[in-house]
Length: 193
Image 1: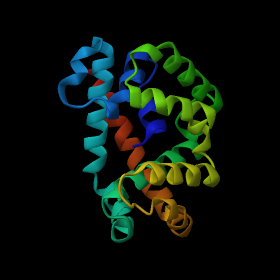
Image 2: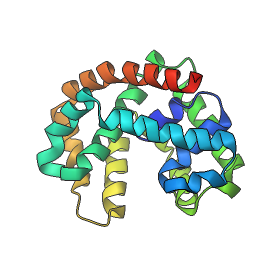
Image 3: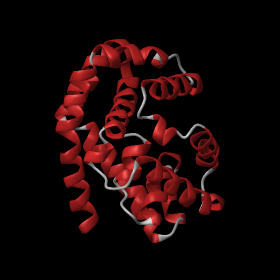
C-alpha cells in the first residue's frame, strides 16, 4: 500500500501515523531510536507491506503488470490501490478526504524535527501538490507515477503505467475492493493486540 492507505490504516494515533509515514525511511532496527508509539507505527507499516505483498488478490494485480514493469509492479499496484481508496473514500471513512489530508499534513508538520531526511523532503512535495487528495484523479496518479519514475535509480517505465490503469480500470478496482476490507480486518487485529 502507498501513503494514503498506510495513513488511513493508522487510525487516530499520532505516533502510529508518524511511524507509518516514515517507515520506508527507517531501515532495520533503527526504529528503536523513536518513541514507543512511533515504533509501533513503523512495525505496523512493515506488517501491512508483508500482508499486502503476500496476498493472492494483490498478486493478481501485480501479475497483470509484471512483464512490463518487473519489480516495479508492486509499487505501481500500491499507487493504483491508493487511487481506489481515494475515489471510494466515503466507503471507508466518515471524514472528508481533504479534511483527513489537512489533518495528516498538520501532524507531520508538528513532528517535522524527528522525521528522517528522506521523509522531510517528501513532506514538502506531498503538501505542495496535496498528494493525498491527488490520488483521487487520474492526473494526480500520473503525476505520482512520473515523480517516482524520475527519482528511480533504474529505468522503471513507471511513467507509462497510467495507461495500464486506464486499460484495466475495472479489474484493478474490483481487486482493490476485494482486498482492502481484508487488510483493514488484519490491521484491526494487529492494533488490538
